[in-house]
Amino acid sequence: MALDLSSLQGTADRYATKSPQEILGLALTEYSPSVGIAFSGAEDVVLIDMAVKLAVPFTVFCLDTGRLHPDTYQFIEKVRTHYGIVVDTVAPQADAVQRLVREKGLFSFYQDGHSECCGIRKVEPLTRALAPLGAWVTGQRKDQSPGTRAHVPVVQLDRTFSTPERPLVKFNPLSQWTSKQVWDYIETYDVPFNALHTRGFVSIGCEPCTRATTPNQHERAGRWWWEEATKKECGLHVGENTHDR
Ligand code: SF4
Figure 1 (cartoon, helix red, strand yellow):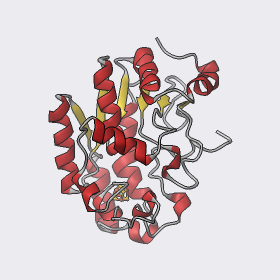
Figure 2: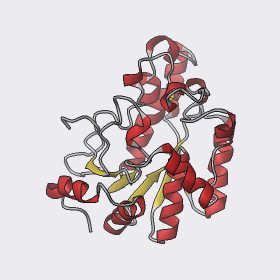
Figure 3: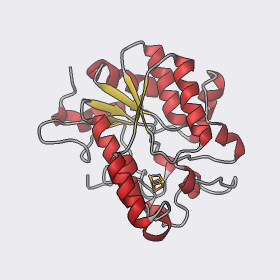
Figure 4: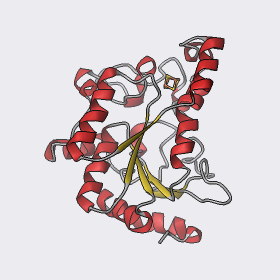
């Protein structure tokens, strides 16, 4: 089965106030086994935990940019063994990385912005990971980022990664949840989390582009801190969450 795309907005409205489990259940019912959970952070493991409990086949993939913290690699392994699931780690194209590093060095993003490096290390691998899927599930929350995630619906057509031949639907079951609800769930159900969270990191990406934040800072303040707050996306969700899309 698959959702009727012509009434996707109505489905999003109907599910807007439902629980993450119900939204995830819809994704799995309609798209299993061609549905993937994108795994990188705390929210994503909450989704994996919920999906395992729903006992419907799904896939999990993770973008291994080659620049993750050692703790993040430990975390990926912990999740894999804790749930006994396959985590597909998707690496960037070696020749593209090599060309970028040869031409601009290992830290070009500090000079000319993160979009080129994220394009090579995240967006292109994500495009490959999504190619066989009918739907994917993300841990995006509305309150995560000022400007870029304020209008995240619970389900939407992914206009960035759909092709004319193959529409791709994106589910955001935690859209309405706060960070506190995510962490309450993690505590209640003993869900594995990245050890960096115990050292002041909230939103965790690549090692050179992530730093710890203070309690009064917004969680995305630790990501690409040398750039404007409204540009703090890596290209995975850009263009999806504005009023006109
Ligand atoms: S987050 Fe930083 S290191 Fe990672 S892909 Fe983007 S620019 Fe490159």
